[in-house]
Amino acid sequence: MAQRLTHRLRTAFLLAVAVLAACAGIVLVSGQAAVVITHGVSMNPVYHQGDLVIVARASSYSVGEIAAYSLPGKDEVALHRIIGGNGEAFVFKGDNNQSVDPLSPRGEDLVGRALLHIPQGGLWLEILTSPPVLGLTTFVLLAGGSAAVTTRHRRKRRRAAVSRHISTRPAQHQVLDGLPSALRISAALGAVLALMGVTLGVLAWSGPAEEASTAQVKSGTRMDFSYTAAVGQSPAYDGTTAHSPDPVFRKLTNTVDVHFTYHGDPGTVTVRAELSTPGGWHSSLPLTGPVTFTANDYDGSVRLDLATLEAKAQAASAVTGLPSGPLSIALTPQVTSTTGTEFQPELKLNLTPLQLALTGAPDTLTVTDTTTTQQATMVPRMIAWNGVGISAATAQVVSAVLLLAALAIAVILVIVARRTAPADEAAAIRRRYASLLVRVQPMPAPQGRPLIDVTTFPTLAKLAERYGLLVLHWNRSGVETFIVQDENITYRYRAGSDPVPAEQPSELADIQP
Image (tube, rainbow, N blue to C red; front, side, top):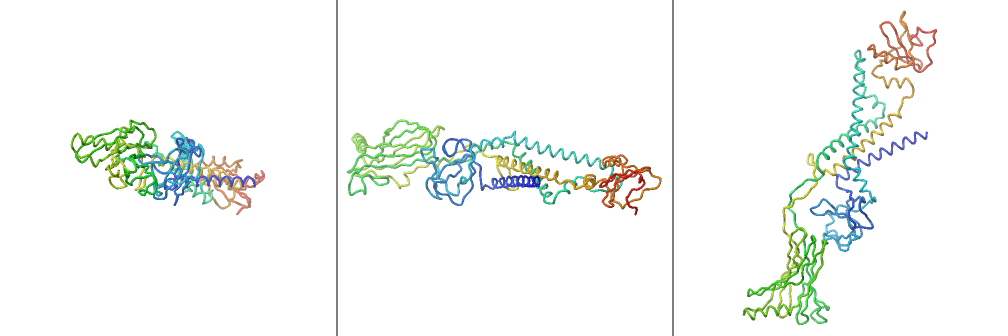
């Protein structure tokens, strides 16, 4: 009883593993969930290098949750914590980072919210999905299938010699017929999963996971400007500091601090001011020398002395005779990135004897690089069929899941087939040698024909195969009788009773008809 219970529990467990594996593959392909392998230290101490995190799409996201979003132009995602924003634009930051993420993705653009964390699980997943491991799994399945096909072919050839007299049931159905209908359906399902897994695996591993592609790539480089000035307490402002985009009145101050925040590739930045007047005079004034930064964000500031700038314009006016005002100021932080690209945003200001004011609308305080370049990038290789496609990397994982599910089903069927043994010897003979047997009515012993009792049924089966005959059998009073009639001799084997006594050698059946 205990063994039977253990067998049922083991069978149920293996079946559950197969079903869960197949369901996991479907969920990953549909895009409702994703597997993230962590790299770097931005989320220490929550996640470390090589951890595996399962993320799933959600209808809404909240501040404090860890979520993943795709990085533009890369086959990667960022897995950081939401620290602000809403569904229109979320603000992300790594727990171990000093600054917030430069991108502000929308809620509908998020890959999903972190659900399950497996420490160092990413390292094991990379090992299990590596070409050697998946190739070995495929080889085992194909080798097992080839062995089964070879065995069936041998049985067909052997039984063809004894099937010349009567048509019998195909031998390959015997094992399946001994199983319950539910397990026969499982066998068919396992075969389908194995075929799909092998086919998808061949397509996935026959080429690289990524391929080169040329695409129009928009630069995400951006510069945010702002300025402040200490103006003291006066009726002109609500506080003691003037903020952009409000004008700065020169009766209150002649010093303005300009701040700029750069978002883009690391590199070097040099700040200069371009001065010009309506008469055509212009001059370039360096403000800061080259400063190198290694992060994707950089904050800087410069101080403008309005009186000095105006004096420079008046000195030029005295020499040229041109009007000295109004003076236009174009503050330009020139950024040269490590990739060799240059970004020169401008903050345009207008200086008069009364005030310093922003030229243009307040949205000019943010300058975005809108240039588009042809860039060769590596994109996932897609496997498409009938309008539906998945990436080769995903196909590799799915093929492994399908093959593992098929392997689990095969293990279940083998265990069940071994457990479902016939109840008695006669049933075992009928099951194993079905193609040799012909059921008949009880027969009397022919007069003058020798009758030989054999000790085992395999011996009787060999005699039938040798002479190209079938085995006749019947049941009488619980005794199963099997005979092979040659031209001169009758061979007999009985199952379900003791051997026939020597004084009754002439009877084929216990009771004559």
